[in-house]
Length: 237
Image (cartoon, rainbow, N blue to C red; front, side, top):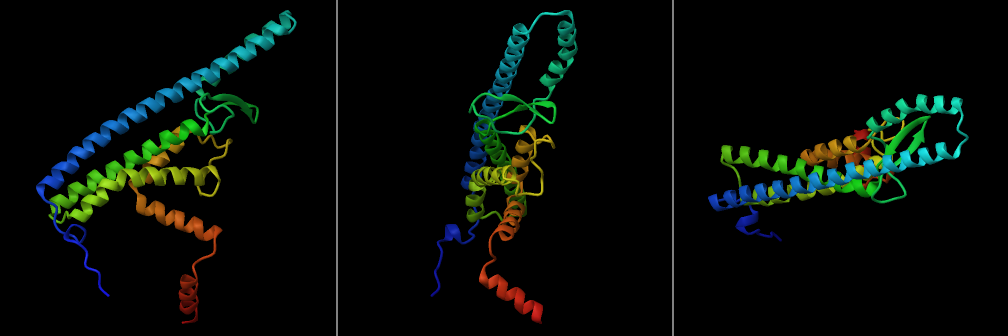
């Protein structure tokens, strides 16, 4: 039984109204994402500042409770450059007990500012949506230039920012779980910049991302029986 799809879903060319409406949609999505990303980045910076301030306050209280001697004072002056260097290390692994405040921890005798997942996830999703938006704008442009932009393509481009955002979140969790090739260990210094950059790449290249996730799934789960039979037949032949 053959199911006939309506013209809007069967590849009919998109009219000028569809193209203009899609262009306006791109501008709106860009403005929303820009505000969202800027807001989240400001919150992340504020969380880092609060985490560093809490660390400095804790360090100061420990020093104040210790016996004030000339040797300890000299040691305190020697430790000051390390604290200043800590201010530069704003990238680190994600995950902390407090959902909205970064935390300073020592990993391998080196202080690292830890950014919680609750702050990293919205930034990664915004980056993925940005990547999807870039892909949609470029695809729309080239399809319109080539004269083969259909209404089905318009629906696909409309959903690109959302699919990019969701895939960025999924790929972020895969990296956090250590299932991807890219490292996310604390020693490697994978921080918020790394995950935001990966989120944008994932949003731009959704097809490659799905292929990568498929390989990861096949490494963890069992392959479908149909694929196993095809591989077996190919090996025999």
